[in-house]
Length: 84
Image (tube, rainbow, N blue to C red; front, top):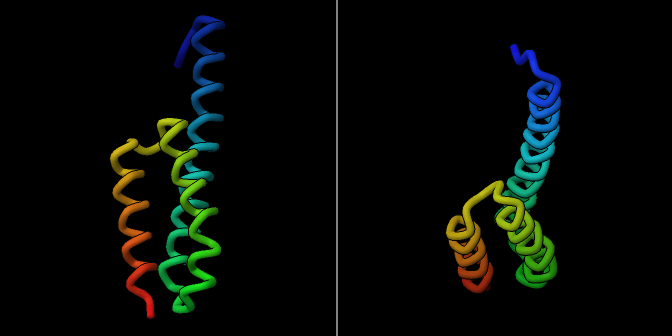
């Protein structure tokens, strides 16, 4: 365990960040899962904006890589456009 004050503080901060990142990541994954389960095209298009925003925020915070964010968004848009 860390012995310096600054190192102890860094451990506390990194734990908070880790929990926050896990929460946002899980929430976004659940939103993506819900969006993919939607069969109605209009409802899917309405919720697409919120999900894309969530993905962009994850990439901005470096929780996921920007290329992964792009791939997720691209796949979601293709999937929604394919709905009849």
